Length: 637
Image 1 (cartoon, rainbow, N blue to C red):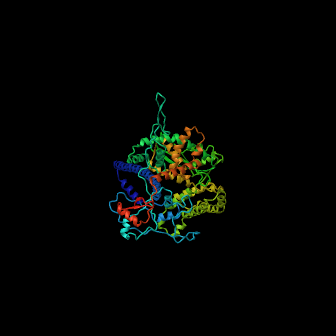
Image 2 (image 1 turned 45 degrees about the horizontal axis):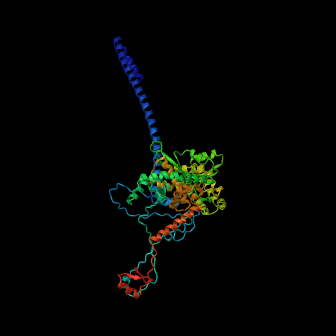
Image 3 (image 1 turned 180 degrees about the vertical axis):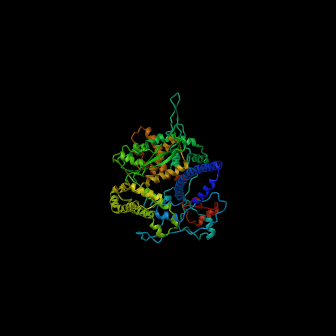
């Protein structure tokens, strides 16, 4: 580099002034061009750096968005898995049932499939897993399917047929028997009975009531005895038909428009609008007082259960898609008193409803972890205590278990899952608690302290060990652990009183009846219609809980309340309750009337006897197939 410089100096020494100026100008131009290139490179470098920074930021954002989308996708997959299980799988939350459903998933059929299903049946997977402490042997026959205990114990169709009116038919063809066995060679030893369940074509009829027109005095002045329909004047409605309409809507879940179609098919021109007018007029007028009386009685109970569900009301003053709510309040399922179930319609799910409904309440409310119940407890200064729902706690662990792909796991891997261990610990709590259903509150409390409390302690000890372990769990498992930890105090509260249930499943089963009806009628058109729904579901579900004939009970209310009011009675609501002696006598009379009516419709026939020779001669003289009864009169075979 230095030698080149020396050579360059030697070369320019011999140049004159003009040549040197020209060389300097040329070098200057080259230097200026290089400077411009340098500036351009600097600009390009700066822009490239800026673009790189922007791309790097976008890349980081895309990575974060991708992670969020993966989480959202996994949540949707979990939701779809749980939804598929809810729709096509087993309904129980029992661990073995969930395991069977996971090993043998039910898939929704493809509606647009162009090919016929040719898939052969595959053998159903069945696991036999022995868990610690689960070595008890079952009978060789397995599960017989019969439920021990409960209100349906001992019931069967055959026994229920014995209570129905009977039509007796003696099936005897003498000529055919003579042809087959020979005349005089056979006799009736005894009879076999064969029963079938029958239905009359139509239970509807027209009742015509005549009132006299009197001619009075020598002038023969005419006077009409006044008559007024006790339900709706100048209407065709009766207490039996309105009871039938309400029974089919609120017990069978049959919407009014389907009922109108059914009436039309029976040639009864009872339109949907007429049905709605009758219901919206009579239910508030007659049943509101019953609903208020039931509400007042329930407020006096110390142990209640509560939950809520949605109802869509078209004309509720809000925009399309707004959900209103049905709050459901019941007496504790363990309380030794007539059960009461109350539905209340509200526009929102705010705590205001609970503040109003429980303003004079002192006691315990078994409920889920919805924050409004905690707010109510805090505002009551301890007068109201919310007790938790172990079923909700189990459900979180069940969902965490079910979104796992356990079908590919062996038994050891399955038993080692934290979801499995938590579910089995909850299962042990329920196994001990279910044995105490028929005990008194005092006996149940003592047994809980001895049998249930240690099982619950073991569950929460395990949950806390998971919470403190620092292990990485799925989002649903984290939610399950957090729920159990946060709700521990309320979930333990049932151990302090024998009248407090360990879960809120009783109310959920009641809401299920309502949900089945809602799936059929979909919505209420107006707020008044929603309030009618609340009143009627309160009355119907209370009647069902007290094991009375719901149809007869509705007839009783719509017959007796107008009569009592017409007589000027004031305090008669106690007699309108489904557990009252007055109603029980009414139901007995209804059954007796039914037996009388059907007894006239199906008169008792004479029992045929073995024909004698003179009977055979009478058959030849008379029409074929005729015989005589024990009094000598002719009787059709």
